[in-house]
Length: 185
Ligand SMILES: CC(C)(COP(=O)(O)OP(=O)(O)OC[C@H]1O[C@@H](n2cnc3c(N)ncnc32)[C@H](O)[C@@H]1OP(=O)(O)O)[C@@H](O)C(=O)NCCC(=O)NCCS
Image 1 (cartoon, rainbow, N blue to C red):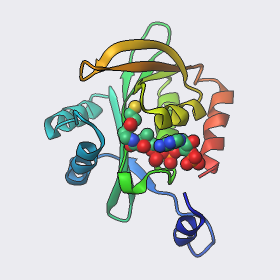
Image 2 (image 1 turned 90 degrees about the vertical axis):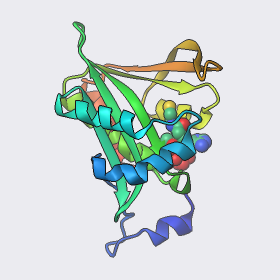
Image 3 (image 1 turned 90 degrees about the horizontal axis):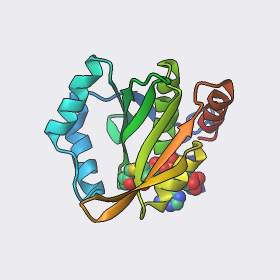
Image 4 (image 1 turned 120 degrees about the horizontal axis):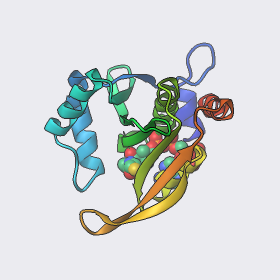
């Protein structure tokens, strides 16, 4: 993010104004869908988002939105998967409006998702990322994710996915890492 852009976002106390992170609601979908459509070759439909949001009530999903004022800047979600070895959190979606990338929005969303996964007792989290999405891989590495395998032709039956995992998120060291990332933005 440029120095000028950061300066323009300062509040009167001199702090950089981060986005507000809060639960994603149906009312946000009017702004979420165009971001989704501009970001993926096979975007999620409104019906898919609604079905995911329905599952938030049952406790198996967490969805968050990042907004500044009324403008939605990005969104992200988790699927909490029960496991005898300790519950796991699968990242289902992390997307930022192309006009607001490299402003720390995804970092802010992932920090809050991590806190929620930890608070819910998860011991690990995981995600898939396109081989070509090297920026996203860089972002995930900063959260401690490491490549663990490849799903061949996972996207559009063409592009491979790298499966990344981050273990031991229940340990105090990981919480400290997350809070450190929260402070960098
Ligand atoms: C990937 C994505 C979510 C990143 O969102 P973002 O808000 O721009 O990410 P952040 O600003 O929090 O980036 C944090 C760090 O991640 C890395 N990073 C993020 N995007 C990057 C890019 N395009 N190129 C290189 N590094 C990148 C950088 O280290 C960055 O820190 P810096 O800006 O100080 O250098 C966003 O580009 C996006 O929505 N892409 C399309 C959808 C997508 O691919 N989602 C991921 C699905 S797995």
